[in-house]
Image 1 (cartoon, rainbow, N blue to C red):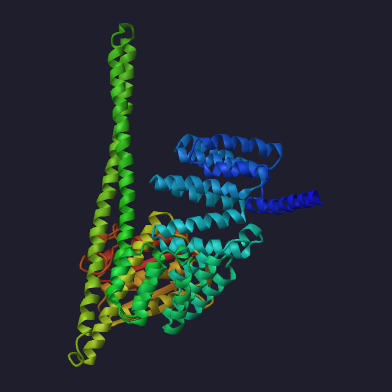
Image 2: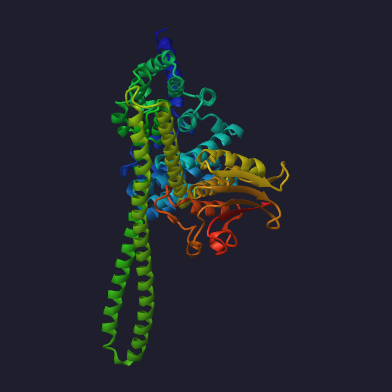
Length: 634
């Protein structure tokens, strides 16, 4: 009886311990493989892991566990990255992609790209890191892999967010969410999308209905306890925007009481400090001491929304300066990398020249080969001269780009400060005690503030568009576009900026239901730019926006004609260049028309100055006409 009880106890212990061990096998690989994987993973930074990885691979092949074999290759790639052995990294990277393709575990195919991309980013080789991230996405699209598209677009979204590229980050977050919503892949559907929805909430949310949509989606895709914290965090932000202090306090306290809140969002406490001051106390003064510690783009954009709601132009100005400085710093860092690479190329070429000269002097001893040596020297000199000229040209180009960057920073610093100073000055006048300003004066100052705020937003948009164009992230959304509606919306957008003595109107020979396949927002952006320029230089007379199907066969022609000061003939060929301005005293970055040219080309069309009309033609001393051609069948 005693021995039977002992035997029963041993069986019970074994029956309990075996399931527990299986539960720790997170990757669901063969139980004989998992101990090797776990030990190798914990020792990946040390040489001892090499033997463990080999044993894992041998055991995986012995029990025919394809997933364990694939995981062995991921460990080899991670080991190579720890050793910073670039040739070995590329070899392991290619091996992992090949093995994951053969075994069918596609997630590790894209994981290989992410590991190598992160390696280059951590070693300050930004261009290589971004190249691997983009290549991952391109291959996912080419293979039509739902997992690859979801994984790569999520990775790119966070990369662009970290680099303060708002439009690109939004694009890839929405792409990953779209893939998530339309896939049947269980691996993707098991993932949480709460964090991406929260970030879009902070980057885009403006009204109550849109905010509630994002919160509903966060709740719908929540998978773990941290996700619930993020949902509560979003609720607190929504109630703060809507001015509901009771519910804001309730959800704020729920978040702060949770020990996992710091893990869920590392800037949450600072955001709550800002909201407590702005929403509960109605005091924006402490906010400016806190925003300097915020590094996330979505946090800064959200606080700018609070500043707008509170009419705090000082805080709004500080946020714009922080974002602008981040963009300029990033641009400056990339230019330094290019110049450094160019200097290294020149040093290598000079070293090569020194070696050639030494060999030449040594070969002169061999009189039999004098003629051959002379020919070699001549050819080497020609090739060297050509290479030196090319390298000097490359350095000159880098220097020119650096000068352009310096001019860009100086120009934008002046252009941004001018409207900012106007906003601050008139805001201080409005803050004077009641009775010191008449109502008409107050309305006039408010209109000045609104006008300068619009100018400031236009400058910031130009900077962001220029950044997207230079980084190759300027994307189009093609759909059916009603031509006449686009023109009416563009004219409506700028009507407040048209001088009192100017008659602005719209004419068309296209049917009211006529549409083209194109990007409505980008066409409207070009027309708005044309109209704003016309408003700047036209003080009396008229501005005509027209839409025509008869101007050029196969194209719809949008045109903006004015009776303003016009374009001098000598500036007709430079007006579309970057930073080109007719009048340096007029507000603007000098980037608008150059951005219009790039947008039109991406839409398959062209932007042109009509040289047969107005001052540029020599037939008149006033007026100009700008044309946008969009193909009817794109």
